[in-house]
Length: 554
Image (tube, rainbow, N blue to C red; front, side, top):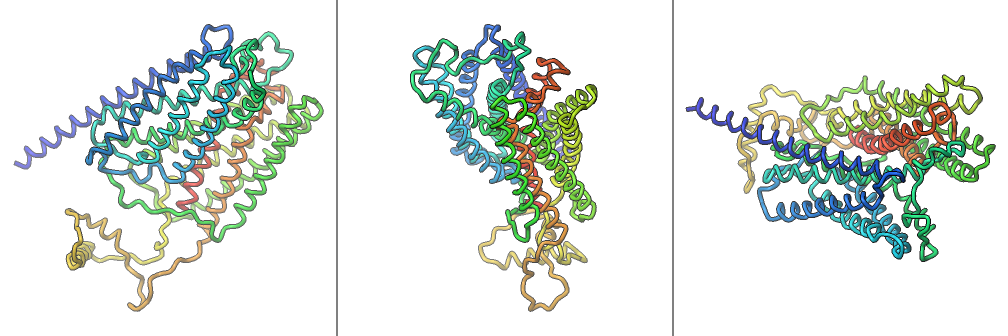
């Protein structure tokens, strides 16, 4: 009889596995087709000599947004009415600080859409109404999606799995398409075409905000509004990436039956910390100061001032990445002395964090190695080129070391404040039986069946050898290893914020220093920078999120 039951359960598991694989394949095919079509439309809308303009791309995005918004509303209503739709929650997915970041970036994206609407209203008399409809639809989408992800980021859905997987992949595709469109428009806006390359300017010439140079704005605030919403693009770009990552984790969690009860509550504290945050704030303030000087002097167009501010920018980056490299080496050395265990078991959130960290770093690696080859091949003449070479080499080293430090930190178990207590048991089953008797003596206590001895032992605290009247153990000051790791994480976090702000808000030393464009020709160099830099910008923001996670678990 048992053999028949085992065969039946095995066959059910096989059928379930096949169904899951089919739904994964179907949802992946949807994503693949949407993204490839979107890439073709985005690429075509860049060039003026192609009969695809921004209007065609925005119509495609509006259709995607409406479909995705309709599915999110359906999911929210369905799960609220079905008691058994979501039986489990992934405690690692969608932590409150990540959802808080999503809300902050979403708020900035809404402000950007408001500025766009106000700007495009001035061109309505001579341009398409689609340019007003798109930010309106996108604003509604941001509101619905932020509410959806805030409530359901931890869901492990058990009903309508095929529809849910396809809907989540549609959500992922829509956010990636919005990210690609925003990155493309921002990159074209920031690309500086050298005067001597007049024959290639047509490939990077963007239309006026209204869509054509012959269309004039009907109110005087258009120039201010356009400049304002371009400064908000970095927040909109990060919002799309945050939402994409959270949708992917939800997709991986569809059908999961594991409810991680042993997840530890992590709290943010700056107790006993001084050096890391202080030095990090000094670096952040100094870096922002040099960045403002860089932007102001570069926009004046004076070649002498441009070389001076480029040198200041390179020196600032050299100091930052050098200190970050030294800090990560110290952190990796502390990990060698750390006795915390490595985490075990599958975790979609952790796997995604590591994959994004390594994948996004390739963008910065690409720009650095192209720069190194160009500078070395031309002889690295002058202080400016020497600093450019030094920054590129040190950035490569810093990226490697930081990836190792963050990945190692993400794979360590959180520090428990009662690790110093003794936990020696002669017979765990005796302790389990004693725990059962204690639970039965408590009135109205609900007891789960098939309690694991290991879980019972793990959850019980045995005090060290001390008198029975001794009070509960109090919080101790941070050990030197924990304090050092937290100081390092705080410093690296602030430095990565600095290295995100500078390129995200318009620092383009790759174009202001002409060595790359002269060595590779402008068209190729612009392609390398405009493809690699968005990934480099995302790498810095993702490093901030990962370092905050490592800070909490240290």
